[in-house]
Image (cartoon, rainbow, N blue to C red):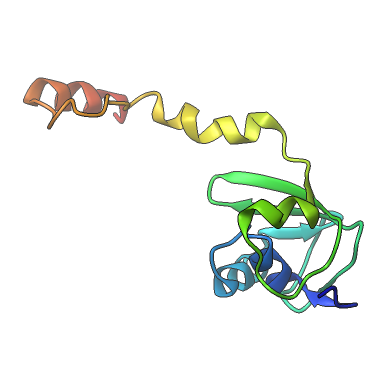
Amino acid sequence: MNPHEVRIDKWLWCVRLYKSRTLAAAACEGGKVKIGGQVVKPSRSVRAGDIITAVVGEITRTVRVIALLDRRVGAPKVPEFLDDLTPAAEFAKPREDQAGGYRPKGAGRPTKRDRRILQSFFE
């Protein structure tokens, strides 16, 4: 199950950093994936010990390759193949962005007054 060489786009998809291999390849081509600080192409081979930085949505994930694989694995098995070095502050970033326009679940549709208050944040 552990091949000698695996493409970066395939490995990123296998360890579930991206939902599809196409998205992983697009991220590589868009300069959102780096190995050792260098932008990589989707065809770049991954080796054990490489440190990969990938922008996934709003979060910049940093992972160390522990082992190679060429087939997608279930979420419980992912820690066997990567060591997540992403700081906790990165995971908190999306929650901070919601703070300005947050509405509690079940609050219903905003009233005219609520919409005016929300609009004042964006002006």
